[in-house]
Every structure is written in C-alpha cells, then in structure tokens.
Image (tube, rainbow, N blue to C red; front, side, top):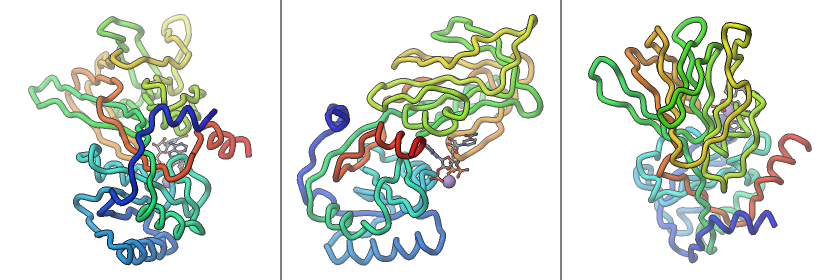
Length: 281
Ligand code: NAP
Ligand code: MN
C-alpha cells in the first residue's frame, strides 16, 4: 500500500543514467571517511566526481546534511536527484545506513531506480523601500519572527485578511518538513503526495484583545498566504537551517512551489514506516 502511494509520484529510470555525482557530508570524521569510500567506489564504476553539475548528490550525515545539500544545488533541481546516508539516527531524508554504502554504490552505478518528487515551499519577500523581491525555496519550512520581542503580523489567505497574529512567530512547512519543526508545534504530519503547505503558530497570544485561529492550517496548491507587518517592518526569516533579518518588509508570500525536489529511490522508503520508526520505535 505504502509502496503504491509512493509509486504514484515515481518515474522509473533505467540503469546507467547517472554519470556524475557529488557528496555532501556533515563534516565529522566518520561521514568524511564514508565520503572517501563512496568516491573511490563510484569512480571505480566510471562515474565522474562533479561538484558543479552532479546527476546525483549523496548526502552523508543527517537530515540537516540533506538540507545543506538541497540549498547547494537548489539552482539545478531539474537535473539533480538526491539520496541520503545517515551516520547518526535514522533520518527522514537519509534512509541508507553506513553499513549499506557498498550496496548503495552498486545501485547507483548499475541498477534502475525510481525518482520520487516531493513538494517544496516558495517564499517571496517584498520590500517597501524599492528593493527587488527576494525569493527562496524551502525543503522543511520557513519561520517568521520579529527582529526583537513579539511578532505582530497580519495573516492573509488569498489576499483576504484572515487574522492578526501576536506571538513568537509563524511556521510554514512542506509535507516533508511536517515531521520537523512543525511537529514540535503540534502541526499535522502530511504525506508528501499532498502538494500543500502547513501554517502552524509559534506561541500565539490569545485573550480578549488578541485572537488567532489557534489550529494549524493546511493550504492546497495555488492558495497563497501572505504575512504583513503591523508596525515593525523588520522580520527574522528562517529558511530551513538558514536565517536572515529583513528590513522594510512589505509582505512575505507563501505558496507551494512549482519546483520539486527529486529523490532517487533504489528501494521503497515508505513514509508512514519512517514516521513510525522515528517517533514510535
Ligand atoms: P538541528 O538542530 O540539527 O535539527 C534539529 C533536528 O531536526 C535534528 O534532529 C534533525 O535531524 C531534525 N530534522 C531535520 N529535518 C527533519 C525532518 N524533515 N523531519 C524530521 N526531523 C528533521 O539543525 P539542522 O539539522 O540544520 O535542521 C534544521 C531543522 O531543525 C529546521 O529545518 C527545523 O525543522 C528544525 N528545528 C526544529 C525545532 C523544534 O522542533 N523546536 C526548532 C528549530 C529548528 P538530524 O539530526 O538528522 O540532522
Ligand atoms: Mn542536524
């Protein structure tokens, strides 16, 4: 059943299509040693190490390493697929163990595989001072906080005022990011075949003066959500593990991105099994 769910998104790729590769590591000694073995094996199999234009990127470390890999190759998502090896605990983006790298390397070099595409979040920040709009893609989530103290912001859905938020912040996550920060905010776990974004509140103030919905909201594709300042136009914005302070913000817009991330699947990696194994045991 789970495998069938995944194959609804999957495209079959015949063996021998992957010609070049790159390895992203967490940069600890064990991950780096593993990188060296992967590089040796794959070059023995006549694949080319190409940090600039890899057909496949192997992330060695944790889920955070996959976030790093994603942002390094975010400009070529149509030409690069990703696969993850975990050197710590089981990851959501890293399903291969260190003990399995030989098997993985042979699969990369010799076997047919499937590409599964997962939705991303697009974030567009526009400014009041004439600065050009800044646009980002997130694999996990984007959070919005104030530069200092409480965040006060208008939340609009499809250009229509929804609520005035007061609290620590807002978290917009992708389906694959729903198991990360979003989960800590009591957001729902979303299957990645549902192209959607989830808005979860970070410690909202709710009393007789201030009122927010209080529940996480899941928006379908094409339902844009906007966040606008009430007074302070400075916002602290995180995109996955990266954080930036933006000045003179007019609006931040969130929508399911047109771009997707492609994972190379050499064997099934059912989402609900991952959820169970990570959180229930
Ligand atoms: P980190 O501090 O190492 O990450 C925190 C934890 O989140 C790590 O255990 C990481 O796994 C895990 N994680 C990352 N993506 C995940 C996913 N899609 N599903 C389930 N767990 C996931 O920093 P990082 O590795 O650079 O990761 C950045 C992420 O941390 C952010 O995108 C955000 O989701 C998360 N975060 C969570 C909270 C919270 O829950 N209160 C607060 C801030 C940030 P690995 O150990 O395998 O890397
Ligand atoms: Mn990490």
